[in-house]
Length: 172
Image (cartoon, rainbow, N blue to C red; front, side, top):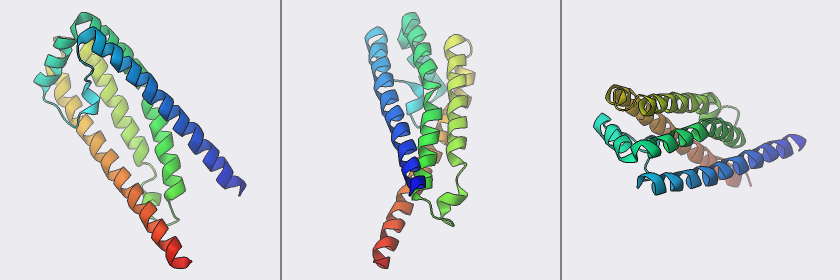
């Protein structure tokens, strides 16, 4: 019982941190919208072409690129928060020999991809306009890999939760 309470406490602390981050990052992107006329960012897209990254950074202008660097700085905290939250959700949904049990390191792989993506975006902004096209070619594929893993993991978590519910109901 104590283990469940500790797990729930960790879950709610991480969920609170996740929600606070969503609010803070939303406010930062609103400011980017005011400065640059667009609140679009690269790492929420599934994929983008290098010329799209170049065009977005051009549209930001000098002030927008400076603010985007600030947004990227905030975004360096995000993977840590959601990796730990995903791990906690997986622990809560996982059974001893479930698929999730064998995928326990997947959130850390997603986080590593996100950090690499952020570092490459820093490089694009700091090296604008010279290094954007070559860096964006790599970064776009890392972004796609990240989102593919996120979609797969969330699907498996939801499937495991449904299976848990069905098993619980069958046992009643």
